[in-house]
Image 1 (spheres, rainbow, N blue to C red):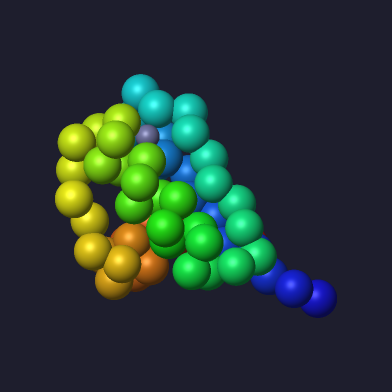
Image 2: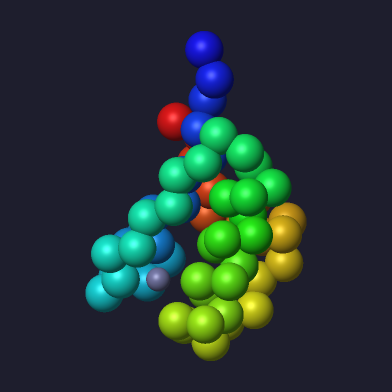
Length: 57
Ligand SMILES: [Zn+2]
């Protein structure tokens, strides 16, 4: 069974309903990084996103 990598932006920014879910971790990190930068103006490293924001579901 493949697991998916999920970022629920609501956990990081309480007023945002953005959710990313992908079976590809690289893609999930990339999408999350773009979203954080474009929408929230925050720069996260891949590592920070993986460790602090991405859940495996
Ligand atoms: Zn967001």
